[in-house]
Image 1 (spheres, rainbow, N blue to C red):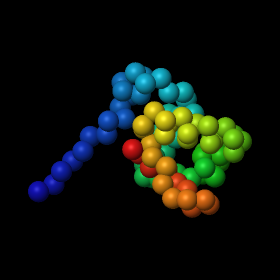
Image 2: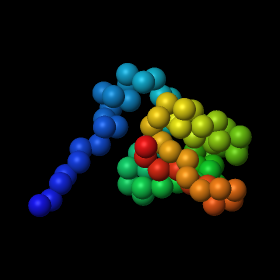
Image 3: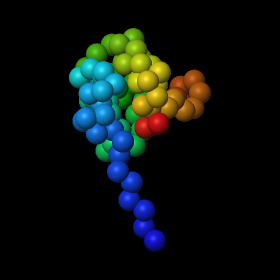
Length: 79
């Protein structure tokens, strides 16, 4: 038996929760690569570490992604 899950992160859903363009880019990356680090987010968004952290933290707070790991090994996955 094969189970195919449809992502809850559709464009319609994302519009209802009020995310910005940078957060859409992060979510798109996560859909393809399954995980992302803050360092990868800095490169992806071409922004500062602080801005990357704020965008990731906001997505965690909204329940869209989860933060896993500790210290330098922290990464984020779709929640």
